[in-house]
Length: 443
Image (cartoon, rainbow, N blue to C red; front, side):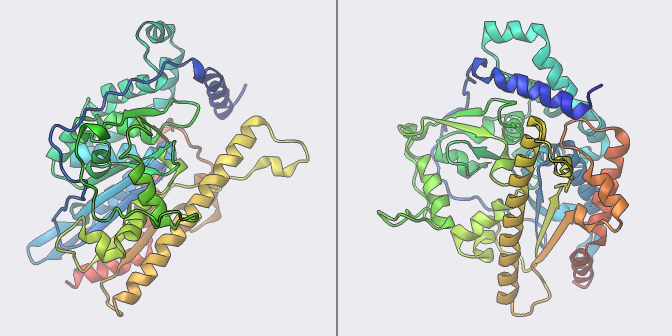
């Protein structure tokens, strides 16, 4: 009997073969009723600035991220106003793909995540449910008669079983941390964040977009799912270009990363050239969700400047926790002279791409952290950079076990439980996390 991974791969290949037969997704994003500048909006809460990023990696990433939230919930320190959970100090969660399910659910429901999320998502066989919707003849008829695509079927499933048709207005009304769900713009290959600032560039009202649409875009694996499509309404409103969006030098042949970011953002302002925006899995552009920080630092000229446009006043203590569910699985085809199968080739290509992205993102972030620390002139208040990844596991047996867990939306309960506990322990044992706790207790 074929293993689960090969069954999934065969289904994906079959689906990919008929991608051209899928009906085009109908954009339903609503134009802005009130025109406002595309500047960042500020938030103000707590004594520290705490940024989390949740990586891609299916349910594996969702469960590891959930374990980190559990540990933050149970980590309490004392301030001038009393005992405070570190969980309540979270300002921003930037998420990609599998991590976006956990980020969005926490953003919507807060502590309720600790009551029903495990059953509602982590231990649910979401993959089987989605495959059944694709293979169900009833949905074939719907596809022909109503033009519904597989991507829209996924949105419907997430709406019904996970997010209860909630919109970004519901998320913002709760008053929790800022949730930044990231996809990839297929046209530019760059990060596309579901934020009010980004959506204003195409004169779209983010508050009316459903959370399920953003999460589906963030996890829309190429070929298996058609892109999420947004209509560019840029010509329907008079959007003032933000001050930080300075164009690159005229006629320049080479662009710095900062100029490339600005050039790509500027492209949204021309609805004639780009009337539709196609969004796919956020892991293609940034599998760690770290560019929510890195890009802002580049655009605004440093960490303090980047934080200042989001958070005023800027706290003295900056904390960045990266939850990285990347695995280092072994390529079995390297043990033989035989040519790799299609599945092995596709898996190796994607794995190599993600590893290179992650290495570059981590290097950029660590370089920035080093510079910020130097600017702080020896201050003991950070910034603190904390990585939660399987690299931090103590024994080879543990590493082998967790690295063997595949990227899927269906994991057995025992694996989910072990991932949750791993998230908790890896955060608890991280050296910089211990230093942070000592600093917080001394405040």
